[in-house]
Image (cartoon, rainbow, N blue to C red; front, top):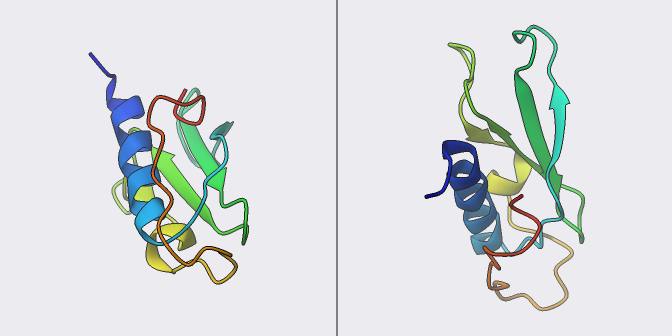
Length: 93
């Protein structure tokens, strides 16, 4: 059974893939103003470097999934068609 964080990452990758992005691995870091141990997970598009962020427990004025890659279509995708998200790849771990 997938964890909530894994499910959020999968949803983020799927959303970005629909915008023609090819997302890299997620990198976890501690955000400013977040509780100790609260991690923000960020992945960047391999073509245009736009990002998506996943926050497991966002602050009241934040959302779970956000970033430029969710909102903007990739301007540098050489294929101009969606890449199938490989949900069982190391990207999600």
